[in-house]
Length: 194
Image (cartoon, rainbow, N blue to C red; front, side):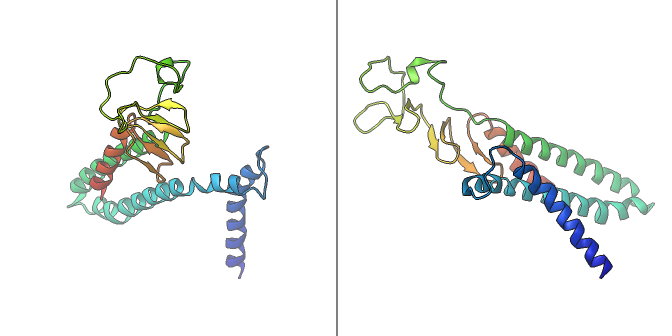
């Protein structure tokens, strides 16, 4: 019972360290479902990082450590451990880059006036492949900007994303023009690590 009581105290302490910083935020309202929903969107990222750490520990402790302790398979264990560490490092770098690199968006009107959508204004239209059925330039009704080819509005990010592939909840970001390479490499290194 003493061990069980210590486990409950440790669990409460752990939950308090997770929840307390959120409650101390000045704009946090306890009964606001939007605030709780924003915090819940990071659960997939925590889940993925927990899985990576768990699989890393299982592989190194249950597979590589016995190889390193056996004198006959010591060299093979070192080689496998070095390769696994390299792949895991690259996987984590690509995962962090997928999360942190913005996928790209349409320039703001301060950067380039030609992308701002004003129905009555006549502007020089760049050569586009994707047009409306009537031949007019595509525009986003939420962002009030003209859309280049393969640009789509993401309802989660609330912005138009260049060369949008999809919104991925596992990285809490869209996969687009600037982070598509990191997403592809993340999948590649994940398959190699398996």
